[in-house]
Image (tube, rainbow, N blue to C red; front, side, top):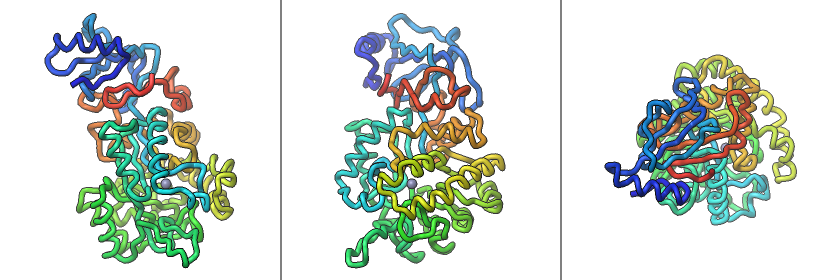
Length: 426
Ligand SMILES: [Zn+2]
């Protein structure tokens, strides 16, 4: 079956090529400059050969015989790189509604935001996204609708509701007791936590997200304060891993970070106040850090107007700069890092703005791109399917004008987006 939708004239050419080829027709992408994220180098004048939704060959132009009737996508004036991966996003959230304003949004409306934001994020060049926290399994519905081809969006791995303690960052503390409002993922005690993990998996989660410390955009908790005991975190991680699910721990404070790493989580989200011992432990356990170091800028500039509580802005002023300094420190110490931006805190589609910050705080452009491709592919659990332009992987391919290795901010303006051999933006 024909999976490649290029322009209609190309489609006709593809159809013409069917008779010449066994199986699905081939498409040839001419890449003026190709970023090889596995080798950490660029290659000039390459051809990427696609069949169906996968890449079948990557080779220099001179080595590839392209027949006259073949489908060709000409990106010879562009830099071509693998589709980007954001490991920390909330597609069903909207940056305009924080604090008490968030209470006015219904669950169906959140799901519709998800539809809108999934397309926006895909068009920004992010062909794979890990969604870490959503209400009412709206993220599961979003993932399934994308997979079934009903709406456009990135490949998704989703967590469902985030687990957390009563009154913690992953609960909802905005309303007084008479409203009896309890976060969907709230569970206290090792067995209740295990039961909640089972429930979340039952309803379709690909991974488990929980809050190991307080947070910025929540009411009444300290941003660094640990939430859950080691015993509870161990039960949570053990249960999730037993069902083949990875675990992402939201954690800002040093003690909560260390406890979560000791409990065996796969990634620490935010990691703002990680200390030397935490860095040592993350290296020892191979734990990924997913540090969202762009959104501080948005929170401090626009937080008040989008309803963020005064206490949230105060917390951000306390930890924003420390998080960026600790990003540099942890990266230089050799901790594994994957790109994650916390979309919904800032406007969806601006994910690429974080690259410049990653470079400002110690990475080379290549290292920042690797964090959003080949390294993220490992953390999300698709190490051989996404994250690089290589035979056998999905044809998730983007292109920019100019050289992002000289100016990484070019990744804020992605001109071409292909996911699974289908062109979404050209
Ligand atoms: Zn988040």
